[in-house]
Length: 202
Ligand code: MN
Image (cartoon, rainbow, N blue to C red; front, top):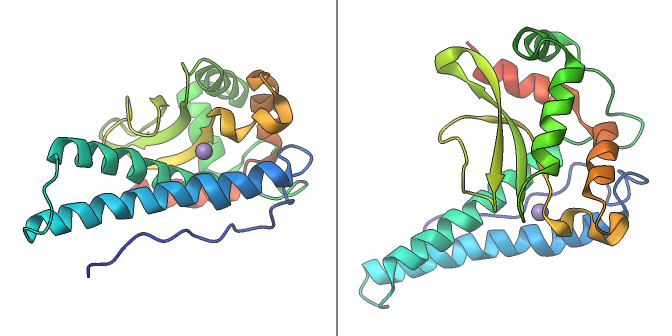
């Protein structure tokens, strides 16, 4: 059988982001929700493989849609875990190539932060705010993805992402997504974002 997706370990303990994101949220988010996307993507691949062997009749369009959704969920969650750091070790204002590029493209860190926060707060229903690098115009760009895979900017590397599905904050923040978004800036791992940008920017 071909290779399948696996749930990556969190790069820190479930309680590491407390008090900004509780251990309970992290445990469910990683151990249940992310795992479900991994399993969903693998199940779609299994169906496609069986269909190719003539062992299963499938609705190809429906299975591919399923694959796109679950694959997006898996990739974005893997990035999301990495772009956060334990409380006290993240947040602040980035320096390095990222700090310079943000100033160049958004005029200041504060205007970037405000626009990214607005993108996160105004996602309709479930989705993500994302910071991506667009090599053709050598620019940082913000995207607002619906679910995991709609309105995504195809092919651009994600440097930073914020999950604003209700499962990401409701147990702790109830309906106050805005407060969650504000607090989340305290755990952003700018070292990771710096590494990502350096690896994709020529
Ligand atoms: Mn999520």
